[in-house]
Length: 140
Image (cartoon, rainbow, N blue to C red; front, side, top):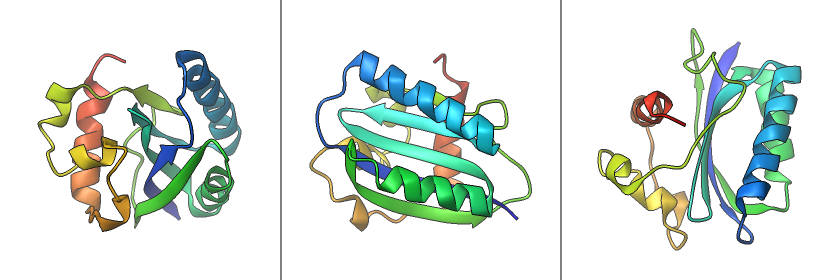
């Protein structure tokens, strides 16, 4: 069964561009080995990531990600069965959302506020994928 899992989390400390590059490189290697695709957004210490692939491998990846000490407040926003991958071109796409792009999706802007309690957010798969597709089309 092919699934999509969207989660958010907060960095436990400030991440440098080199830290982000290391995270992305490791994610690409892990995801390629597991045939997971997706997109990672990061802004002001806040992560929003979509993973897509076979349920068992995505579940295992999410368990591993949840234990990573570089972030906390890991919250699954949706877990959705799907017919096809939306981000098949990337083992892990990456974007830093700019304020103008976030303004198009005011319901998601709080996710990138370090003070926001993301457990209060309700995300439908349709809204989550719509926002991620906008970022997927932006130059990365």
